[in-house]
Length: 243
Ligand code: ZN
Ligand code: FE
Image (cartoon, rainbow, N blue to C red; front, side):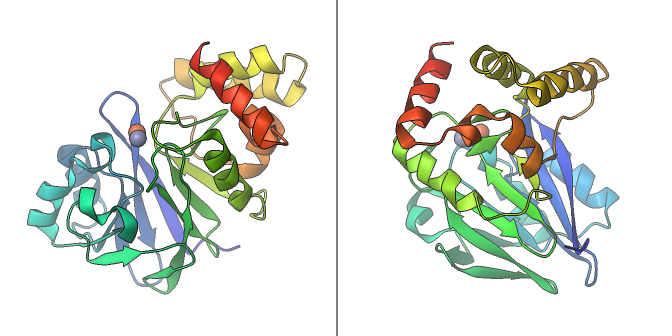
């Protein structure tokens, strides 16, 4: 893994993260799930004032509402799930699972990750070791099941299983502190989880982000990744809904 792409969190709304992507060799730029235009424009201008691509993980407003203004200003190419095109801004690059989307000298692989929504996808930059799971996987948690089943989301998680521990997870929300409470209630004797919860408390007290986090860290601490069966995953998700 080499640093071919950098991913920088841009806080939006109350707890969303959009991600600014820069492919270093060619200066290619992208933004993932811009909920709002103003903070996106500020970050893009600070990085050189150019936007080549917008990556969409799913159709919710807190992931796409900033797009029209960014399109009018920068004319980027919009990438999203072909199967969800009817409820997304107009796509320039409609993708499917297994596709690779060029991004400068590198590319993003597409995973279908249904559960939170049926048409949810994730982007994976293998050479950079960056995963953009949207609202599928959060630090110490996972997305709510608005459209798909627990079995769908468990299946999506299995697609992340082959990825290296060093993979950086650039998720769509800063939910880590509240997720930590549920995770600790499920797994109170997990020392790695206790250490992460303490770290998260300190980071948030200092106003710092808890993301990105490595997949290895999540494998040691996130109860949803640690669930071994679809049934275990489903009962955890149900317990979290009622927590
Ligand atoms: Zn969502
Ligand atoms: Fe969201």
